[in-house]
Length: 131
Image (cartoon, rainbow, N blue to C red; front, side, top):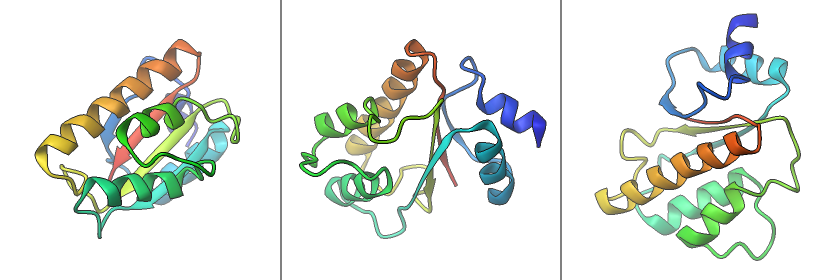
C-alpha cells in the first residue's frame, strides 16, 4: 500500500488515467495519503447535463453550481469547502467517453487536464480515474 499512497502524493504523476488496480486498494491508498476521494457512477450519463450533475453531486459542489462547463472548471479548482493535501476523482462506468458525446468528452477531458495542472501549481495532486 505504501507505494501507491506515495505515488498518489507525487505531483509529477498526477493526471487523468484508467484505473488499473482494485478499487479497495485505491480507496485505502487515498486514505493513507490523506487525500480526499470523490466518487460518482456515470452509468446513466449520456448527456452533458447529466455528467455535470453527477460530478457536482460527487464533489458536493456548493449551492448555486452553474451546471455548465465554466462552472465545472471553476468548482474543480476551488475545493475551499473540502480542504485537503490533494484530491482523487473516481468515475465509475463511464467508459472511454465518460458517457458523453464526442464533443462534450473532449471538453470534459480538457477540463480535467486543466484541473490537474491547476492543482499542481498549488502544490497538490489531483487525480481522475475512470473505471
